[in-house]
Length: 287
Image 1 (cartoon, helix red, strand yellow):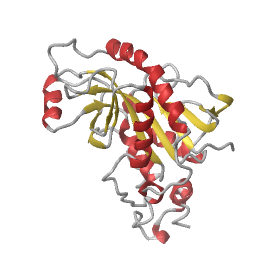
Image 2 (cartoon, rainbow, N blue to C red):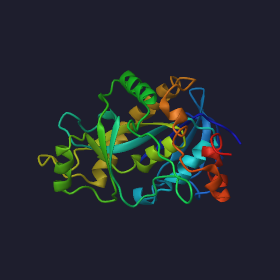
Image 3 (cartoon, rainbow, N blue to C red):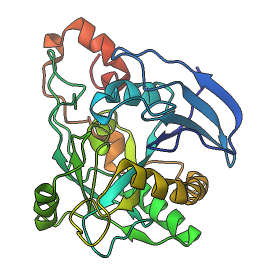
Image 4 (cartoon, rainbow, N blue to C red):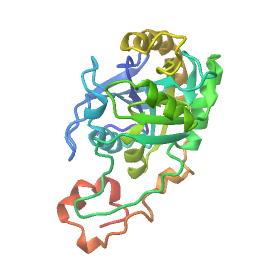
């Protein structure tokens, strides 16, 4: 099967990347079902990448219903070592304005309906997740965003809410009191699953609105989000084109060996079917 070391997961409005050459579309089946859509392999600025539209082409999959385990597993099966996620977010701070870009470094999980681990069913693993985004890949994205001239914020804490509804004003004010910077619906369980798969993960967060806490501006709506996203999408594509050429060839971050001491189940107790399903992830540690 064709390979790519860099994967890009496109969020709302980003369903393809113009400028890719030598394109090949792959329909991949995994032990966890099918991914959101076919994965497009191609060259971007001379770098082989794998692109997956998170919500499917045409945006028909809700955040809660995303086949995140299949998405991450499928990218892993193609040899992906780094995932760049693109997502739209609401701002929880005055200084972070619509049309800004944030490269977040922390998450607060407010989801409750999602399958967020590859482990279970007879195998237990506890990954380190203090730094949920890869600092090396995040630095590449921040420096690439700076090159475009867009206002970009280095770091920030993101609330990941269940959705698909937007926040109540009380919830928005609560998250602000926690010191959170932005809010969105899709970084989890992606970031957790990517870490379990020993894939570096970082996000380009496109700010589209002020959530609903800022009463002097229009209340957030899907129409507002999409309108501001369309204004930012070309900038995002420039960031991606710059970033893929500046990703280091070797990985010296903790992401690359996240499972080294994480699996605590005795190998002889792990069911054979579980070993088979997870061989792509745990094969170098569990035979």
